[in-house]
Amino acid sequence: MARVLQIRRGTTAQNDNFTGLAGELSFDTESNTVRIHDGVRLGGYTLARTDQIPDPNTSFDIESVSDDFWAAKVAQFAPAPITVLVGRAVPIRITTAIEYIFNTELEPFLASVVLVCKTPDAGYEVGDQVACFGFGAYSAPAPYQFRDSSGVHVRMMIGNQAPWVSHKDTGVPTNIATGSWNLLYRLYC
Image (cartoon, rainbow, N blue to C red; front, side):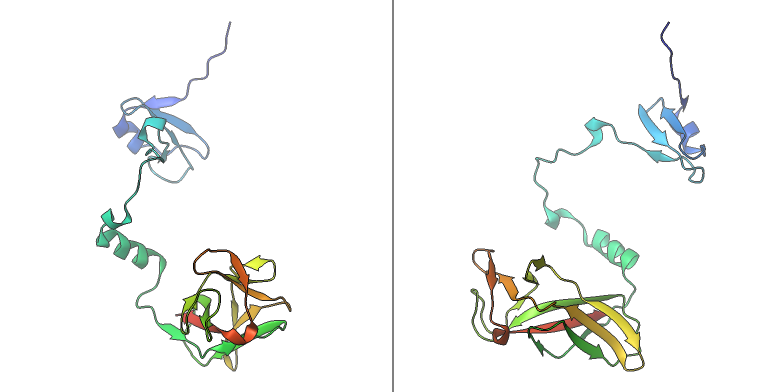
């Protein structure tokens, strides 16, 4: 005789008012879905059926997402108001690290860096800012930050590696001359 495994089941309302043990499953007999429980959340987490998952082959229009949605996401993940501090452009040089110090009492939650074109190079014009770059074998390098008595330090580790950018027209990594570009740090507080 075959063994049968039967899990806890009930209507949607019954499942909504049930807090299962951590790892416990329950079955919603009205929506024909399974819920997984963590021992804390009332109703658990509903798992989607395959017919409830959008077709990945259909196109998505980001313009159709409401402004209210984006405003809620920004409020959820970023403190308000956000202050963006922009440092002075720092020349790229082949060295271990390039650093900029922000003299601020604000507490940063993110630092970013872009390259700024000083002389036409890799399809870019003077003043163009490029976020798709790297050093040697490392792409999309991220600066790190720390605070001491002199301010907030934002440091990019170069490791004596040659800089490159994605060519404006082809996207192909293209070596650049260090004198043709500057690093520009931003601090988000």
